[in-house]
Structures are given as C-alpha cells and as structure tokens.
Image (cartoon, rainbow, N blue to C red; front, top):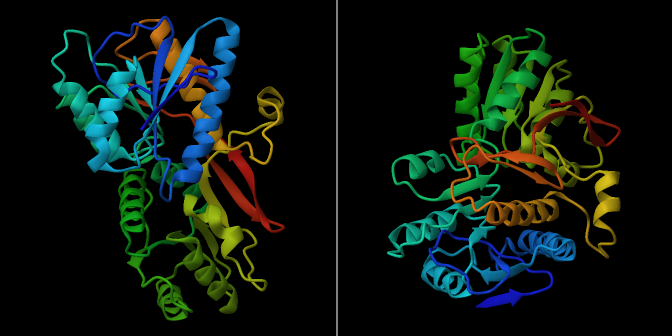
Length: 361
C-alpha cells in the first residue's frame, strides 16, 4: 500500500529508475508501519511530515510517497513496485538493512536509461554496506555510525577512565555481546591496552558472584560488560555485595538500565557509552508542539532525512559520496563507505538515579 502525501509531502527513494511527471519533488519513504518497529517508524514519519511541510512553505514543492515495507524482505517486490509507481526520485527510511539491501538490488536490475536513485537506510550499522557499494555497486547509503563505532567509543572514552587498572572484558555470548567484545579487544590491543581477562557468561542468572570471584583472583579491578541491561545490573550489584572497589562500564544497551534496576540496586559511578540524544531546547522550540510525542532521535532523524533527500533532488545528485547536507540536526556528510553519522557517541556516568554526560565528542 502506498500513500501519497501532498502537504506535507514525504518521499523515500529506493534506487529505482524513472523520471517524475509531477512538478513536485517526490521522496519515497519506506517504513515498517506494522510489527515491533512500528512506534519507531511512526515517530520517523511524524518528523518527516514536519520537514515536508516546512519545505513546501519555503517554496520547494515536495511530495511524499509513504510505503509500509513491514520490515519484511518478502514484501520488497511489492514495496519496490509501489515506489516506482509513485515516481520517487530518492528513497529514504528503511530501518531494516535487509529490506534496504533488497530494494537496492531491485534498483540495480532496472533497465531504465535513467540512473538509479539513492536508497538511504536509517540507523543501520551493518558491515555489509561497504561491500554492497564497492563490489555490487548498489546505490545504497546509511544514516548511521560505522559498525565498530561503539567499540571505538569504548576504547577512546572508557578504557582511559580505568586509569591503568587491570580490566576484564565480559560478554553474554549473544551476537551483540560477542561482536562488541571482539571489536573492543582488537581495537584496544592496537592501542596498547590489553584486558587481563576475556570471558563470557550465561545471561539472565540471578547471580554472577562465582565469576566475579574468579576475576578477583586474576587481579581484575575494572570490568566492561557487553550485555543486556538486566545482566549489567546483576553484575554491578554482585560487585557491591562482594565489596569490590571496581570500576564498571557498559555500552549503549545500558540506556535501558533505568528500566532494569531494582529498588536496592547501586549503580553509582557506572559508566556508559551511547549515541548522543539529539533533542535540545532550541530544537524543541523549532519543531513546535508535538502533542503527546516526545522529541527524540527517531523523530529528528525522520525530519533530517527528508531535508537531506529534498536537497539531493534539488542539486540533482545521484552519488551522495562526499556530499554535505544541512539539516535540523546539523551538517551531514556521506563518506566513501556511504555513511553519514548523525549522532556521535558520548560518555555518561550514573549519578542520582540517571546517566549524566561527562564527555561529548
């Protein structure tokens, strides 16, 4: 199903090839409007509508072609067909990388003499992006940090905080935890920082005291935990129970700590690296009344991606590499890997029941 929106017009381009007959610039917006990602997609759509309305008010006619991709690879032929019929000039929005990838493959197969339009995925750090662009030559881009950005933030901002204390890298054995721990280990060793222990643990246990006692015997005085918030809470509480004066840190999954802690939990001093929240008082004033919605990253990314797409159409760009676009969240530049990083990682420390930023890149 496709919805064409004239005011505001939101369009996301999937890399199909065709020329619009409408006087308006058509942006194809491909979002999963059903399933677990629906709340995120709806906030992105709302931000996109605001941006489109502003563009129309400023004199640039923008028309949005909104398609529900369902985050479903099986629906890609239907999604691509809808976007082509809308005559989108650029496609933005897929939050599921496989959908974005398959849409780009459809664009590559198009026999139209018109060049394929760019497809810009939102906040997908998949490592395949570089190969798909360089080897398969797909018109695929991503508004996201690099795949190893979180690990680099840990090495650059957290490990120096350990102040040369012997540290351990712990992971929960999940795809996320193991990959993050492996990336941190590789990058830290390149920087001359080597963990004295690299270990994984069984997640969702009521206690991890036995593991912590083994770490104590190894001389550990600091730990980085690559795991879900629930396990971070368990380990941190066990460290306090054993009266260990250790430094404790985690990655961006720690953003869920406020929802995982028990009343008797003591997270004081816990460090975390995560992407910075984009909302500021100035942006709240610029965006205006959102009703019951909160101004957060998803909404602002939806706004920024439409601004970016409209500018790319205006400048008749089909290759976005090296191009810089002014958006509500600041300038965004696509590097040669096809990424534009909208949200830098920041270091936060738990204080008085919440994380407070202590270092902002």
